[in-house]
Length: 319
Image (tube, rainbow, N blue to C red; front, side, top):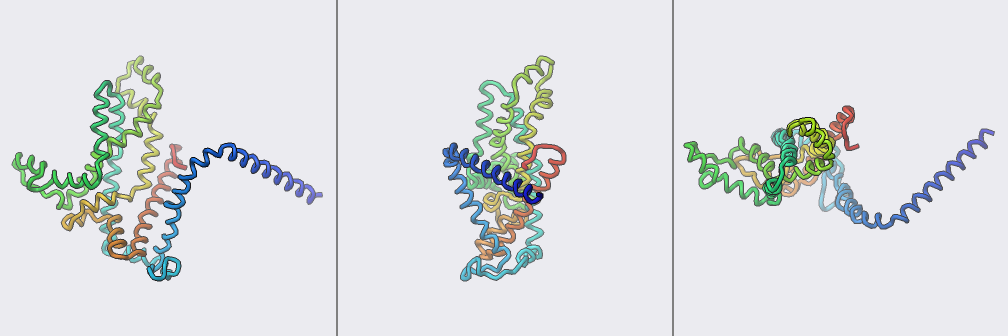
């Protein structure tokens, strides 16, 4: 009797599953145009994002070009231990962490700019937006060239002003102590205006009646920013902050490498430049893969921890 009931339950479950699958296929066939549209993006992700993960195994091997990835001998965590015991570990990790924290501290700047721009009226708003946006379209190579030109110890504009004020000339690009500030603040100048777009888009989603009601109650602009705008964009702010934590250890390689010279190397040598030098220039493919994997693993760990903390606080999270 019991066996018959179980058999009947199994048949009933199979019928339900079959009906669900049939319905899913019908829905997919009915909306086939959407699947065709998304297909190029899926192919791109598979080819350029997931397929290269196959090469990650060389971080645990002694890679030999003649043997190939699969046939190269396994060495376990030897490449990681070599990096942790190297003289470059402390320097690169410290510089990377310092630049990452420095950039994270300045994370609120685009938010403040967006809040201020949102309350501008008339032609001033478009003028301010244009002035703030256009540095984003300057390439990294041109930006570093501009920095070298403006900060030149002999003919640079900055040193010209310092000389006019009776101060000695400073070779900013060769001083390790100036590297982090030049790196971070030039990035703020270049990208802060562009970053405001996301927050301005979030601000437009706030219903105008809230502001009208607040004005009727006598609220000034500061009160409206504090009690309407900031709470309204807070989910967007949290998501952007989470994404920033997800790339916490990923400091811009191109800019750091272009700004780097032998004089400022003690402050400008970060994990990304070290990976490039040891991997592509030094042909230590397994070692550089291990260093890069370590960097990405730390990023992922920070993202998971921060997402978990925000979930505990019942805030917006990525998953």
